[in-house]
Image (cartoon, rainbow, N blue to C red; front, side, top):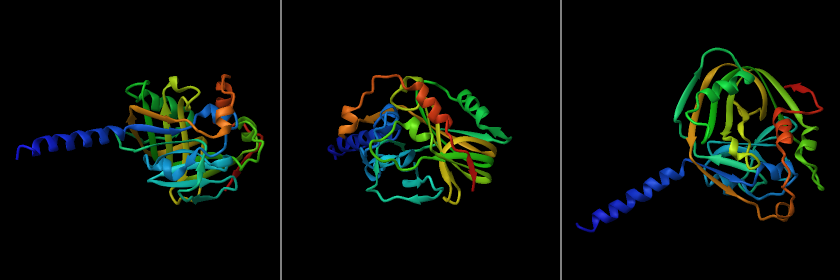
Length: 264
């Protein structure tokens, strides 16, 4: 019986480490690499979701917006379609975590995207850690975008986004999936709020540009770990990543595009 105590202690220690490992943002590549046009696959979506199944990103050759929810990976394409993708599908940039609710924030009155951001940040207990953000809501209006598959030589993301497809839906229910990242992540991830959208029927989705939320529930998962895997692909290893791309990132995130919104 004496041997049981050490074994039990070891089992508990391993279990605790596993639980701690769930509060990690696992990320492939960097946002500045994506901005510079590094769209070659760095890993498969199946390999990334093996590290948890809630998150976002894009696909090889920038072929649509990536949404990971419940361990399933969806492609929101530039033609407006949303489809599940096989685990072998490549991704040049993807960030995921294991979502476990730490805080619940009800939305009981209409809230626009511009007001949503400071409202959310005011509820954060610290601006120095990561938060996975999930909002299940009804939207009076939401606009979102997707970018078409690119061909080599790849243009920078800002140029590709100028030809994005922008969609707008009204009176729709769905889920916002994304992250709030601290300011010190500049160049590696998106500082502040980065959200993708998936409709409740899984037929519509993309990178969120704007919305008016009627009501909903926002859940936050406090995330203390950050695991960044850098690509081994030649395009990344040879890329020039010295420049400050903050202005480009803001333009891409806010939806600076030449195309108008198409109502679906």
